[in-house]
Length: 112
Image (cartoon, rainbow, N blue to C red):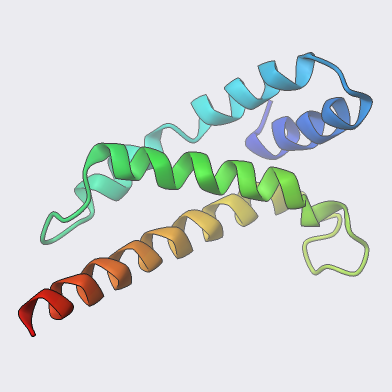
């Protein structure tokens, strides 16, 4: 199954209250696992640890699955075949950017 299909099935099973949703969540995490290495090795000046990259991925997946905007007819991602995957990737990118902004702010604050 594709990443987007896994996300859709997770939301369906979660709405039913099925324990199968946990299996779909595991499969989603496994399918996005490569983003940990991609984000870690993308750094020019290493500030984030692999554990930080793992946290970005997990937090982004859980946030996107909770909101599941691809099911909202008012949202631009509605009925997009790759909507869930796009949402999670954007969320990972935003979380990474927010991490660096916070680290740089902390670094400047210590320098004062």
